[in-house]
Length: 167
Image 1 (cartoon, rainbow, N blue to C red):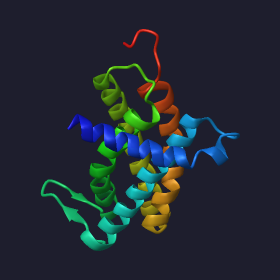
Image 2: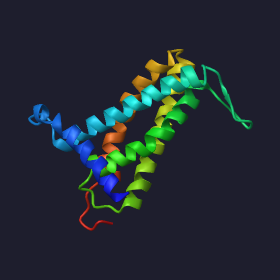
Image 3: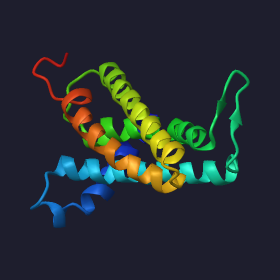
């Protein structure tokens, strides 16, 4: 299993770093890796959101017994179930490799930041779709802009920061 993990990590790094040279004069490698991996995870999130909303839930509410979720909120949560572990893997092993925080601390902090991202996603989707009447997929895309900025700053300086002690 460890061999497979190393192979996956090496393959992802090789692919991402292959595209880095034209950008090397403008942005640091870590920022490029964040943009590439985050962009991939974001694209996956938006695609899964679209598929869940249009084809799995068929634009219908999701009745969970005790409460009902609107289709755009349910689609967000369904796509999150895939993108959370994928995003953590990429963050820990590709983007922020030099972080010396222990894995469990990284995971906890990543989870805290992601909870903030979920809150922002929820608030912006409710605002854009329910209150402003915008289409769900473009609303999700605009929401993503705000969430990515919050996430990048939080992940860089909180979840995966480099410490002197390794905490």
